[in-house]
Image (cartoon, rainbow, N blue to C red; front, side, top):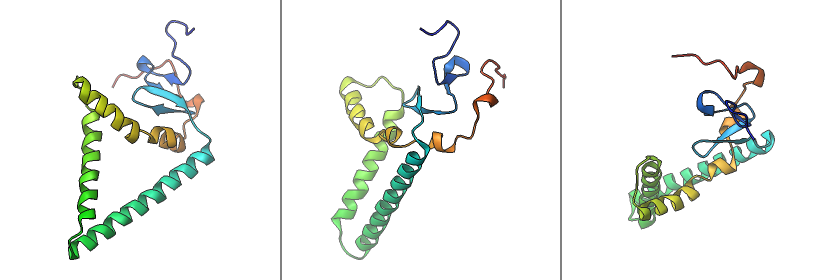
Length: 140
């Protein structure tokens, strides 16, 4: 049981909306323990290498499509555009109809896996728990 006026483990700040050092943002409002730093770095590097390979494939496909008719290049562009629009639309906090909401939840399950695979927050966070005053707030 959390005492009244206290934040749960891993949270601090106004409305307990910030993550402490050693914790990373998960989903929109959650904080979760950071993964092992070495494993996290290897995962980030793996994803970046895969991203470079995919971008290289897309550029090569586009260049080949410029010299001759290449339907594969067109389909890849349409799919990429579709996924980008899905990601953008699902991030808006609207009252979508049930069918659309379920459709977005399927897309978010696929596109939101980066929170599970690796954490940039944990890798780049250099804060120390002693540097954070959990009870002082500054008005802007």
